[in-house]
Image (cartoon, rainbow, N blue to C red):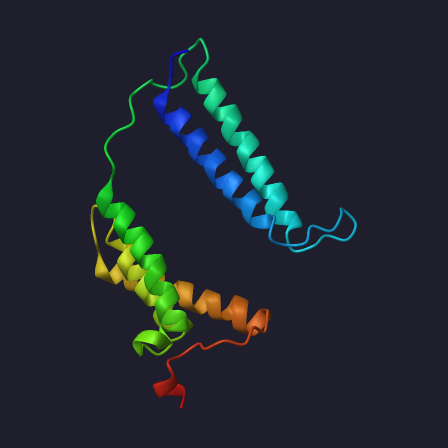
Length: 163
């Protein structure tokens, strides 16, 4: 059988791999049942649905009729990949710190600014003013949602500012 649409096939395979990973990770937690769901119930169901969706997309890519343009999958876009993954790692480090390396937590606001600045470097054009406006809006909305509405207790500002 020949792959008619490589992009769809690769997307389906990726969905299936991520879905299997979620389902496998859920096996470490109690599942419960439909009426009293345990912590592993939702990741297991999500993993199963994602795997089935991925298989459906991959099988359709093997079909007799070409779907889409049938172009082969291109080369890896390394710059966006590194920027987006690096931005997420930076967010985690800024939010929680790295005590083993002596890096203190810098809080939610610094984490969002770092995430936004580094992730925006993945784009073709970088406009600092727009990125700073976006980071400010994201910080305000995150503060409103997580601290003010949900009343979650975590560091918002660096410790050297709040004391």
